[in-house]
Image (tube, rainbow, N blue to C red; front, side, top):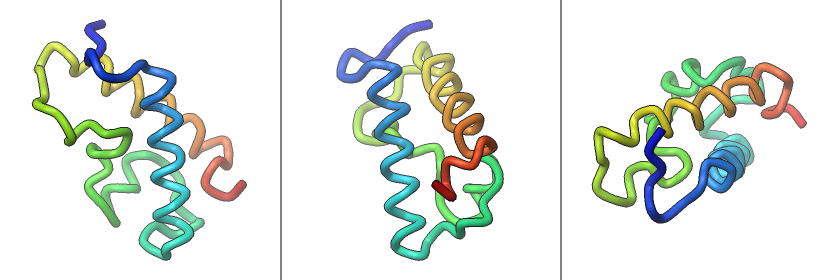
Length: 82
């Protein structure tokens, strides 16, 4: 898995969570959101964690998939409601 040179997996996951919680607080994403894929009903969730802030390298796909998988597990464990 190729990591972007400007962030780590842990940082991107934590940043994604923070951005999602901000969107919940702002009323953009509802507390009832049950998965990462459901986020797409409200926002372009692919940009969470800073993914759109730098040129995207196709070799980073596994990295961003790992971020999304971890955040999906967090959401399913009740992370949005905590």
